[in-house]
Image (tube, rainbow, N blue to C red; front, side, top):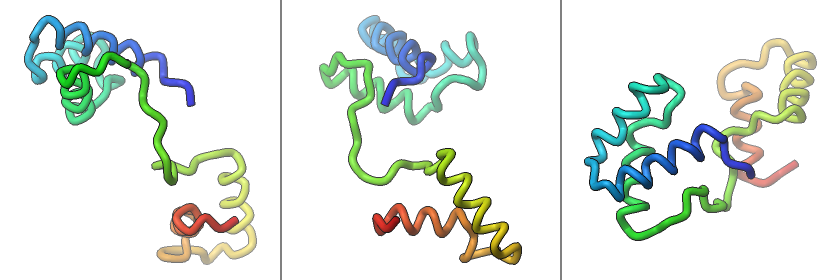
Length: 109
């Protein structure tokens, strides 16, 4: 998966600021002042600061196994629409989002 261009740039800035020995709290504040809410959150900044302080030099995310955090694809949107069209009473634990998450965790198609 290709990295988001903004995230890639922000990680490069974080790497630079870690080498300059800037504290993590300030590293988090600088991009927020410059770019606003489009920046990564404080916990992500702390994770990347630790990543670089531990001697890692890669600014790319490592591939991860398992189910993705979100399942928003065109195919899933079409399936959700079909489910809703078939039964407009779909709510609560029978909602399409719950169904898709359960399907992802079981690996069923």
